[in-house]
Amino acid sequence: MAERHTNLIVASAPHVAAPANTTSIMRDVLIALIPALAVSTYVFGIRAIILSVCCIIFCVFFEWISRKIMKRDNTIGDLSAAVTGLILAFNLPVRLPIWMAAVGCFIAIVVVKQIFGGLGQNFANPAIVGRIALFIGFAGPMASWVINSKMSPAILAVAEVDAVTGATPLGLLAAGQQVPTNLEMFLGLISGSMGEISAAALILGGIYLIIRKVISPAIPVSFLATVAVLSLVFGLDPIFQLCAGGVMLGAIFMATDYVTSPITTSGRIIFGIGCGLFTMLIRVYASYPEGVSFAILLMNILTPHIDRLTRHKTFKPAEGGAAK
Image (tube, rainbow, N blue to C red):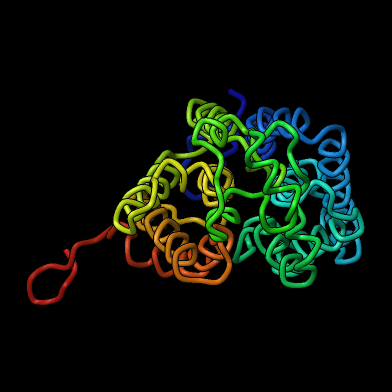
């Protein structure tokens, strides 16, 4: 009888393979961002498409060239650079010069992501750091909002006088001027960063990601709930605070980043609460009317500590200090 040979595959647990991979997850995120991109294109015109495409191209190129220089495998096929580019574009004024957007893409991909080892090694969300770096380096252009012609006549009258600081709802609120209605902000009939103007479009994308099991609702729900509760505590309109600025974009598409958010459910809830807390503290007490990006960045830094405090204990110590 012929001897039978069996090849055994030795590997660490778990051994159950999931159908999802990085590419499919990133593809779902891109699909979920389409409604917000469509609203931005409707409101701001073809420039929204141009800025988005340029940011995607810059991020993909910087990822390709940096990994080539570092002699690492090509990873542009996982679509993570494309997602970073589109989310960064959503955080920018639609008329921002293209070369400035390229600087933000370089910081996001090369400085924040690739220098630290690539996807899975970055300490913070690349798009958030790119946006903050642009805000610090180019404060004027980053606060120059295009007047949305679809806003109500009363808001347009104010915006036309002071288009830089008066066109966004948070800017109008900080200046004590008339603000858009909650319905206008929910639908996207306001001015601001191109990807944050329509709460409805962002929520639609978030629902898609939850249905596809790409994200857990723990972070978005705890983030948004904290903003709503603290709005009531500070005597502010919670619907306004949820729909204005980058809360929806941040809670659904940036705070839920796999690499920079906690891995446990309890950790994610703590993370979301922290994001909401810092967002409202900055909005209420800081000189800058928006705090979402800074809040998420602060919580990204705290993520390793949250993971350590909330991770499940595998072995329970027995009485007397010995493990069972």
